[in-house]
Image (cartoon, rainbow, N blue to C red; front, side, top):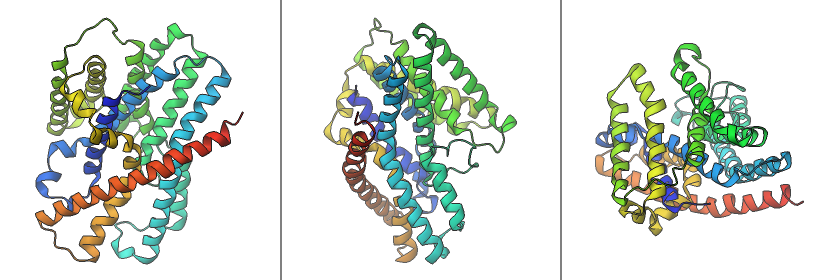
Length: 355
């Protein structure tokens, strides 16, 4: 099941995550310091919440161990081709830079360290402390690790827990995750527990399916409340510090995305039409590729133009380089979507699901 407007929203949010990761040195100050960009990391939570809802909708009928196995293979097939490709490409570039262009690297690393981070990523462990506390190779891939762990948790709960009891388990998972995240700096300092962040938001997405409020009618104009809630939560994050900010980052933004998906499930207003437009749908379709490709391109292209070619960092030049980088990212991601995501997934399907 696909809800096209939510796919479109994922495409828009993915580009905002790209801007969040873009280097401060290569972005005009008025853009970099805007709270709309500084707090765009939060849209990763939206990806988790949306994923939890979609997976629950499509796989809530899982009952046997055999069905659990097929479900996990399908999820692996969806994630792994691009994860493997982007990680190996990132490793190759890192080895090249650390061997021949050390002057352009902020923190040089040994080959052993790079290989270790690669293993961390390719085993879906780079959101956990199993292999250490790094984000692995290709740092946004930590969320793919968290996503896969959430898939496993969902599959186990669905198969081994009675259906009527599952909402209670997800509520417990949410409460337990909130306690861990709010006490992370106090009780788990230095321990990489970002997989808990994924489980929290993913579980909330599952509850959208468990409690869909079928009889509740929401007018189409309610869609305009969504950008107000999202921008408001970003403003709150940007204007608060300490424990209050932690509460907003763990609780507030998840509630906002929970409510936003509920509203979009019930409405067909102006925002729906915009998100269903061909351009936004295209961005949604390639969003996974954009997400895993962007960290490399936003490093290579600006550094090549500014550091190697010596392009002056004026506001005009930085905006032009940003635009060029986004265009190349989208074109490249369309290529990897077709040749890596789609064809790679089909190959794994034939290989692992032949029977």
